Amino acid sequence: MTRPLFREDAYMRSAKGVVTGHTPEGGIVLDQSIFYAKGGGQPGDSGKISWPGGEMTIATTVKGDGDDIVLVPAEPGAMPAPGTEVEQQLDWDRRHRHMRVHTALHLLSVVLPFPVSGGSIGAEKGRLDFDMPEAPEDRDLIAAALNEMVDRDLPVTEDWISDEELQANPGLVKTMSVMPPMGQGKVRLVRIGQGADQVDLQPCGGTHVARTGEIGRLVLGKIEKKGKQNRRVSILLDD
Image 1 (tube, rainbow, N blue to C red):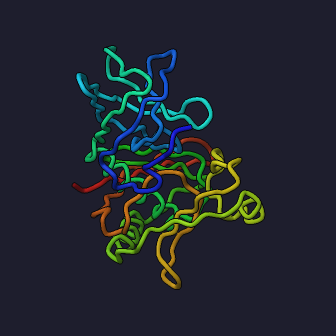
Image 2: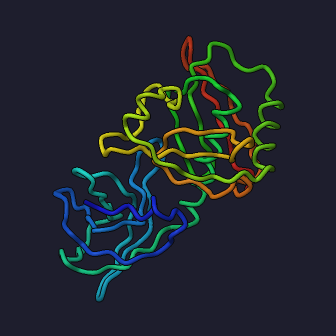
């Protein structure tokens, strides 16, 4: 089992780790990881690891067996042996942009309150697929609503509830095709805003910025028809 340090502190850029094993495909498993494993539409983190006498570039990070997190090297090379302590260095700029885009997509799901059938997060832009028969008519209104919530600089926090509590409150789940991670006894909720200023609360395992103001200005991208009931809406970071 890999301890997910990114969930404890999404702003952690470096940390120690001990190699606990290798995968048949050439991946590296550590006892704890600052690297986010690909999932929920968010890409796996990249960066590098180093140890006495060696270093390795990490191209991406994926989920392994059970709760293992697997670091995928950019190219074959000498692997640190099990038991070796390594220093993890995150590609912070890329991760932070993922955090900004991911949080922005939560805001998009507030502005367009339709069931979500899919999504994708990148370093420059992101998109959500909505179960929305008709495309929204006023693009400017959508963009203005998004940037208004950014400008309010709302806090982004987390809570935890039990699997049973989530099952008793199905309205918290906005996604149609992907269920939040369950089976560990508790589910993480991401909250945007507090009290009367709360705008969103939904299960999510990804990484997010601490306040919406950190997202920066958002630009509304394409609104595409992807089926009878499906509309794909993209948003872009303006810097």
